[in-house]
Length: 481
Image 1 (cartoon, rainbow, N blue to C red):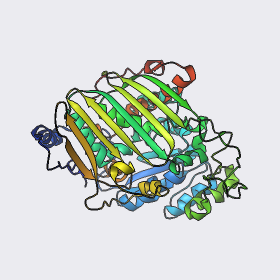
Image 2: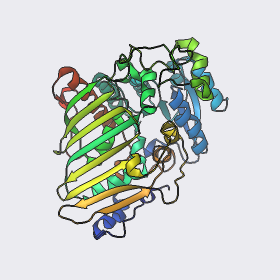
Image 3: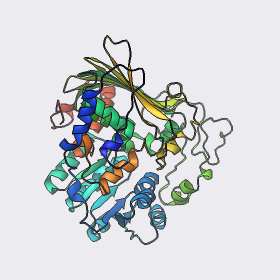
Image 4: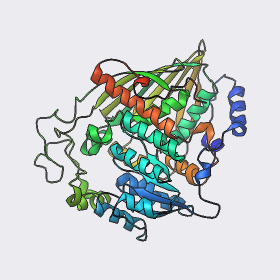
């Protein structure tokens, strides 16, 4: 599955009466009209490996952007530098990457000495801007994990640095690249149910995955910008991409109702906690050798606790969130994020002038499967591509006044964010001209996704709608492409 055509495999149910000629014609013609990946020119010269230097060697950095990248694309890339503020973790990363990658005492030293095609930024969210700007000003192109940054001031710093440097930033929105999300994009672009007027989008984090954000630095507003930014930037980017428009106004509500202060007891960390026998959220990190080697063994350097208490009084982000987003093309979107659900998954519906599209992922009673919710996130983060025969995700399209509906299906790839992880990296480092529906994301995409979250955060604080124009001089576009 290397190209856009293979990314969108669909079928219809036997009892469907809908003609599909328009959709098939659109899909077949799409390849001829796709714009080239705007970052294709950033790849290394033919026959040479793409040189990468990385700042931030935590779990995501050393996993998806480290050993997994080496395993899957080692013939195309090589690491030429590593830096992390925690000296123990960067040495651990060096060992994981084979032992020969140079490590540096500071980020400034690294970018002054390495010859790299890209700097990969996988640090704490609130520090992304620092490293992105320094890398751009030093003449490097950048790949950054989402979110691009955490507030509107830092966002402007990045946009200004990219403009003055002439270099480019790729924002790693892997969810765009899943086969399910790509098929949904195809249907919307083909106006399968007419012009879209409104969207309902609801995301559920289960009590295992959701709780983990509150154990980590993500539970602190000054580090993550809240889950409005850290987590929901994924969802807002999907919305922006699916509806091909940009936001103009956000109204939001949010509170901290479950985690943090909302408990009668609390500890410091799960390891050795006196309340572990009665705390349903007790988590034994000692069973995970990788996390122990990355974090527990290196706490002595910076005091960071990977298994911090979910009831900590320092937690100041929201765990219940809802927002209404108004787009420049007139679409309104209703969004919610729940962080303590019994199951993990999402549901979305697009209301159009000619009908409605519904789809979902991993809702147990809709998918009609039983899964171990405690292991679900670990499976999603793994990089295998296997899908069981006959196991599919469904998209339902129903026309107004119709007596029947149509079902489109794709293989249910449960790992690697629905197959999006490896497809995104393949487009970055191998198939660099493969850019269906402008799938590769840059700073404008990164900005418009975080600005929704930032506006939502401010809307809660100010108790009023917040316009995107209050946060940036970027003018929202009614139709992005």
